[in-house]
Image (cartoon, rainbow, N blue to C red; front, side, top):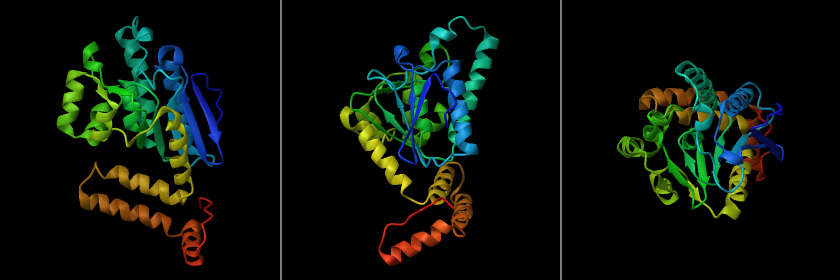
Length: 264
């Protein structure tokens, strides 16, 4: 998984957890073209061959921010054509993230604004520190969310709440993020990575094929009607039936021992 990244720090924790750290603390981990290219490469690599990775933890470098969004200083001198070319890279990075078959947990260690909040929303779920703040501020600078925020936010908080957040551009607290479903847990800073990694490791102990198929089925839940989603679920379910892990799981249950899943 080492691709010589300079704007991402990528580390394996144990056999199956990959910790990805946005590593531009001097600009509050804002993502420029280079970081977007690295994120795109990372998610695409996991799609093609996860190399044993069963869960990703995504966080920010330093104590001051998770991610401030797109780097507006880099964008300051761009003409329209350059802006569109850059944004196409952002689009590809987020599409690849949404397509990633490996579960992604965001460990939100500080403010997540604009594209930073969109990274949180594109993750499968998130834990955050109590002093984190969140916002989609794009309308305050003349654009709108463009990294799937108008799609992922309503799925988390509902359409009416999403309209308030997007149309005002106002920040909201971690307590509100928890109450509205943007994050799953609030944790003290000293416990954030410990607890997030514990959850990641818990996921990794489950059957890998089943986890991937369950994620795919869950992703369909808000995209299609109930019966179509159920048909998708059955197809995903049937992918688990011929696996060695399914047989191992049933044996382990009946033998009253922990299963040893190998991902096949």
